[in-house]
Image (cartoon, helix red, strand yellow):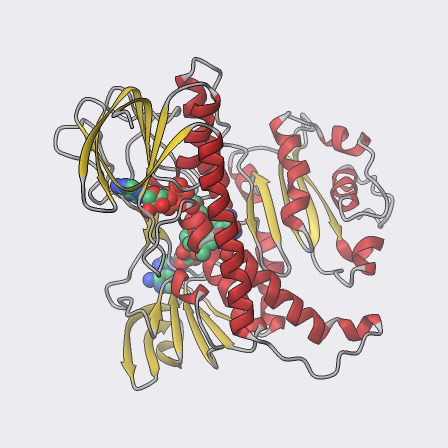
Length: 476
Ligand code: FAD
Ligand code: NAD
């Protein structure tokens, strides 16, 4: 193996592996070094997302959702199932199989695109050199003639007062691997992970209590959507306690007692397991040698400009280790952007149009500005909301909760944001992403034919409703 490449990528998650693949497609010689190790000690490409994040969580969300629907919805369809049972071991085996297939697929893709895939650790040295420590402990110095791309990702934030112990107090990876359903599950943080993993175990039978420090539920979301979500989760039995300031956790025997304070004063709650999901932080441990010129901000993110260039010549950084939302699709597009730039091609990223999806039931998907953000920016807005209860397809699917909401500028008609809560919201939002990317007007959405009966008609009707011209509901 040569020790010199055009490009060396450190990190093989959703930021790093697409960067390496695109660099390979662009006929650059490229190495991708990844150090992810699974619980069995084996290396696997794909980073957090494939091994311990997006993919395993969606596998369990799907399984638990099917169980929940079988219990609660089949009857309405006239289907009786007799008594239902869950086999957690089988569910976990299915999840592990999906993860293995997907991570193995990344290795194949790297190979097919001419990428030299290296497992072990990479450390940036000054002058676009990288110290590569292989699995067997051997160390080599590699040189990148064009660029080094840092894609080292993120790790869960640990609270000093509630350190992870791997048994009672766990992070999201731990919560994906439970072998039994905890009778009482505590979740710290009502963010994306707290809601998704809380939903998984609640649907499988756990009594789930979520302690959230903020007084506002899903503070980053459109208020109308967040209020609807909280209503639905509460109805499902997921208990969300807002304004809960957690101070300590004490493990005794098989349970963990959490002390916190809220508007009512000092409180405590006892759980069998506790998941701490209060955000993630950039991971750069052992990544940078002295004198590389790469700088890090106060929160630990690698400093980059709008095109992911660091302060060091020929060194880029992408994904969770740099500013912006910690999302796999954001990470991927940054990686691709940099690899295209390096080949002299057009590489651009529209940070204003990054969709967010929360894969609970109801699912949530949004893109662009919330109504509140648009108003705070002084924009005169018009909004259109179409409830799924008025959608024939949603009714047929026994999924009539939620709505699609379009936020547009009242003066220019331009669509500023779309917010969907309901079945398949994560799929439906793709149309809105395209609309925002192309600078569509409400009228563009109104004049676009949507197949009937589909859930996507809700987006069409919401756009019509913004001008009080909806057909399938009363315009108020
Ligand atoms: P990572 O995926 O963290 O990958 C970084 C890789 O670099 C790792 O393999 C790491 O081992 C390796 N590495 C680090 N340092 C070195 C080094 N010095 N040498 C060699 N290798 C190194 N996002 C979504 O968009 N949708 C979802 O549904 C979603 N679900 C999630 C569910 C959970 C439970 C979690 C935890 C996260 C989820 N995310 C989701 C977030 C998503 O996983 C991250 O945004 C994404 O993985 C970021 O990609 P990345 O490549 O920047 O970092
Ligand atoms: P998050 O930022 O989404 O939510 C953390 C929550 O914890 C917030 O509501 C915050 O107010 C609360 N919090 C913070 N400190 C607290 C404390 N001491 N006590 C109680 N509550 C506290 O973070 P997360 O849920 O850990 O997820 C991490 C990242 O992973 C997110 O950036 C997210 O984008 C990504 N992720 C995405 C998806 C998806 O796209 N569907 C799924 C899972 C994770």
